[in-house]
Image (cartoon, rainbow, N blue to C red):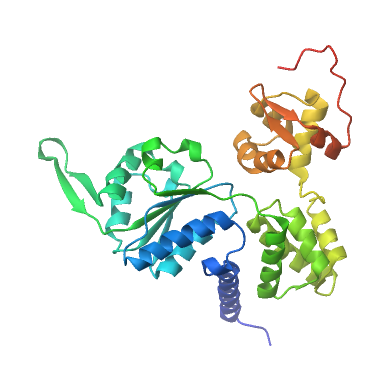
Length: 345
């Protein structure tokens, strides 16, 4: 008997709830289960412990570093550790002062306000944060013209946790109002191996040790990428390997995604090869590279470059991007002989 449309809709809703629950489960629930970022975790332990001891709210915290390393997860963990709700928003959403005022006045004592991509808050709105963070009050203007008047609103003692991938875009006045500014770095393969194995257990993936090591080695030091690769590997194993994700299956799945054993994807190779073949290894400007590979310059700078520089394939100089010796090896080409040659501009 055919299923009714209503039944199909209910099934889809159930699957959606299950996937949402799995997404939440993949996030570690507390600082004890958070893998990696040991210095940041210890700093947060100190702040949480002191706040609990004195029965007060946490001081303001700024988390910065590349995307996918756990900034949002740590903010949610702080709420769990303090036993307080976390209000999650992002910089681009707070478009005007009224938006910020609405958020702040809805908070209770000790609540945590998490603003992702905080560097994208408009500067006019950002100025309202200064008094909110420091004095827990804001002054808002009511009406216009001769009837305009300023009203001061007292705020509860809340905690602002800001996250940014571009610390340099934060103004000094805002940055200096955070008690703790801590950077999240790329994860070691040991930490990533534990993260992959834990996630595999939660997702019900039959992942061998070799398969877990292969994912940990190719996920660019980023847990979010590791979880994404694991999900695709799960689908690949179900479709083509009877559900078993051993080393060979994982390698085949990642090759289908065009991710090599170094963790470099197709765009990474295009960038390195373009600099090598078209610009003799550089130096060359970012905009020129972006045009050569058909990608947005900001995407290259924020998504691809950090890993390529971290792993030593690319160097960023005052004259532009330069391919390193390691970069020449990974593209399989020989650097040109530059004896007596003027540098590229």
